[in-house]
Picture 1: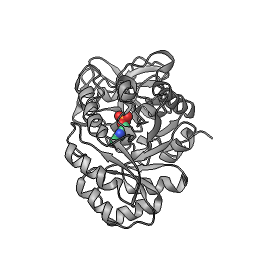
Picture 2: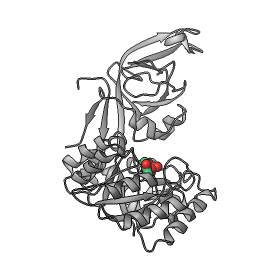
Picture 3: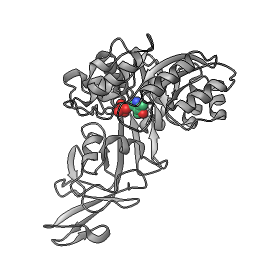
Length: 359
Ligand SMILES: *Cc1c(COP(=O)(O)O)cnc(C)c1O
């Protein structure tokens, strides 16, 4: 070990999680979302270990798709909604990437651009997020244009839910109906709607392709999954104690002495900070695990270090391992102390953190 913080990855957990996708959506094909370097888990490693159940992979940037194409020469890769111009269309064709078409103008440009080989198009309907996608009229027009275009091979109808992680609202069913009614006018075209939350909580939305992201990495955004279907953490974020100090009642710890000791306490300084990807917004009390026991963050997270109250651990020593999130301490729980979500924690780990993959 050269640095004080590192990531460990669990291939058994990853395979378990994709098997849960298959159990929840047995008749859908799986487009595993590997954007943002597989939510920080390493897109090449994730793809290599889920290929038995995944039917394709989703990326958000051309550079991500180019990089995964190098390790997955045959796999189906989808480039999600992006800025489209002629050179991007040509590159998609060369790399055999499927492409999301989310504007009628982009559909027109594609229909006018000669390509070395036809590409698969995922045509995106706006169903309520108002971020990407077309309204009914534009969607129908784009479909008709592309269905007749020699540049286009398969067409898939897709959209993306805004509220699937709130299982009680009727919004998701209404949004689903918007894609269905547009799609129904255009014959039998494969459909894709469901992200992780919808895979878990809205089975009517599974259709032909599901698009799991966060559930592959072990977070259930609905909290629905029980028993053997509970998801498992794939990433463990760890560091080590590099110093220990005893402080007196009233002593402050860290920048601006945000935390002050309510009684004599023992403080451990850990070799990880916000420049590694541990969130600076973590509040006092944010849990971490040392020697199998939860202990609370005490004081502001700094760039390279954080401080934790280890008064309940009499045997604690410099060099002890600290679990920041992973097995027994879900990233989602840590995130709830930092005004964020597991997605942001996973994707925010910086390069200087060592990656340890199983052999
Ligand atoms: C990221 C993404 C997903 C996966 O969402 P999760 O909540 O991580 O399951 C699905 N579809 C699209 C279009 C996405 O951008």
